[in-house]
Image 1 (cartoon, protein in one colour):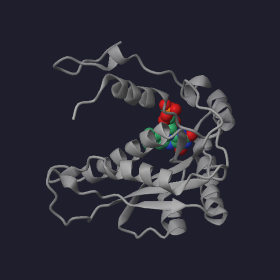
Image 2: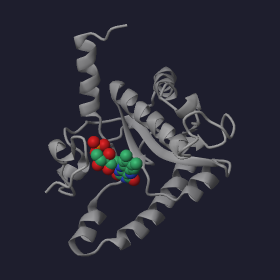
Image 3: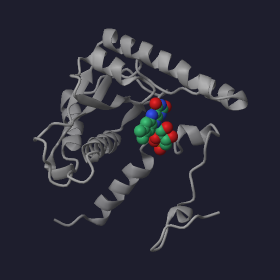
Image 4: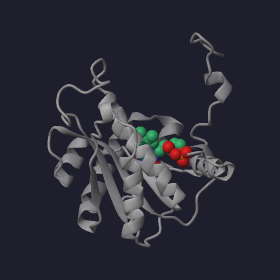
Length: 216
Ligand SMILES: Cc1cc2c(cc1C)N(C[C@H](O)[C@H](O)[C@H](O)COP(=O)(O)O)c1[nH]c(=O)[nH]c(=O)c1N2
């Protein structure tokens, strides 16, 4: 099956216009069939040894979102305390989650025991299962963008809050808590770039021929 030029362009358009969304969520519900398409895309991510270590915990209730928001607020206060001076002030102005505003939350997890102790391709580096679940996150993020749905990754929350609030068994690792919803707009640039937190690095400075080289 060959990808046409128009299809290729659509993939790149989706990649370059995907954003991490925190502040622009609308309350419009995500139809079940749309959510299923997005989850199906996530489920078609690559995984080490075809282990498919992910599960998807869907959060819809205000009650659960409120608990998670409390978890964020606590972790965010801890995070803010680590910065100093202007950076701390700037940090405090950033909106870093949309837990309550987004109609749906999805926790993507990794079952490190799935398919047994010996997994093809994971024999040398056990963390390959975690990377596989991250691949599912990225598929989900891009599929959502293709559906004009925004996604925000909330990592400023402790794993034990996710375990307790969502009833995730101990041996399963929360990989990402994601907020999903239709948005008022997608920006051209990352929020952190628009707000002068960091700039996008120059790609050429990140490409190394044959051997890794320190670049100025
Ligand atoms: C593993 C991981 C974890 C987080 C993020 C991303 C990833 C990959 N990002 C989003 C991040 O800030 C964003 O992707 C970059 O700033 C680039 O912006 P775009 O995603 O291109 O809009 C993110 N953003 C945020 O506001 N709160 C958060 O807790 C996190 N956590």
